[in-house]
Length: 126
Image (tube, rainbow, N blue to C red; front, side):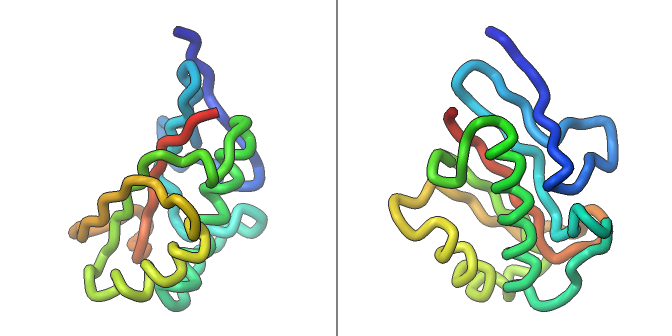
């Protein structure tokens, strides 16, 4: 099976030894995205709604660079710093996956990169 990395300047660059995404066969595996603006490199630190929106914009960019889209996502994992943010995150998330949403897990974690409030990773088809 062929495997290739995905890279786009429309999403934050990797901050470690990993790829923004990997295409393997008909699948795209997206690394976790945090609420960083790819143009400025600055973190979005507002509400969890604003952070979720930025994360999903970043995820969308990686998917599109891989020849996929949010509509082709089959599995999402949401990492939250505080599960009390779940309802607010979920309201914004629902706007992006309004029809036939993917399978999903959401978990609270002790800490995320750069101390952000949310990180989301995804698996999609091409």
